[in-house]
Image (cartoon, rainbow, N blue to C red; front, side):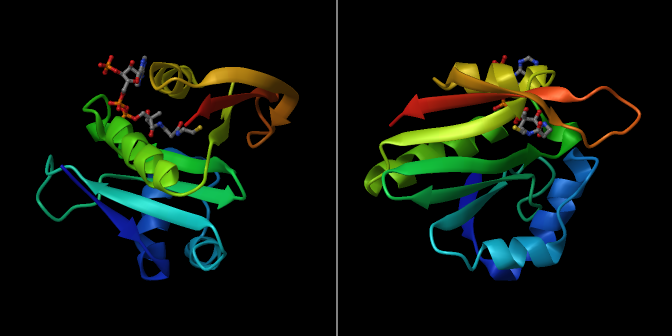
Length: 152
Ligand SMILES: CC(C)(COP(=O)(O)OP(=O)(O)OC[C@H]1O[C@@H](n2cnc3c(N)ncnc32)[C@H](O)[C@@H]1OP(=O)(O)O)[C@@H](O)C(=O)NCCC(=O)NCCS
């Protein structure tokens, strides 16, 4: 399992990975623009599960002053529960700790059991709630966002 730092040149790969996991995917151009902003960084994992070259998941973070946030995180659906997201989170923790980040934040949909379990497993605790925050599917009721944070 290998993790590498992604740059704007990986925007297409990031867009493709994001589209496999989210109903309203972020476009390649959005990733390219984000990755040129100060404090924004992404890592891609090549788990070697499909082959030694196939991107299998990614994490996108933004750091500012002594805080950082997880902007998004996703693993290819068929390759979940194999430790790939955990590997990406550990990479993020190490990199942020080497800088000046002391606290890491994120938001997760209250009905996203997999992500909530993943974050709890990695030491995140709830620190707030935004009612009806997610409204991406007009056919479904809005979903609360749970804000979580973890000390580094
Ligand atoms: C959430 C997500 C990133 C997890 O990726 P993953 O590679 O499967 O996670 P890991 O294999 O590292 O899981 C680590 C631990 O998290 C928890 N976990 C992960 N998925 C879970 C699930 N579906 N149900 C319950 N617990 C789960 C477990 O404790 C797991 O450890 P275990 O497998 O030893 O029981 C993945 O399901 C995904 O891409 N989902 C769609 C996108 C998404 O929701 N991203 C997060 C947005 S905030």
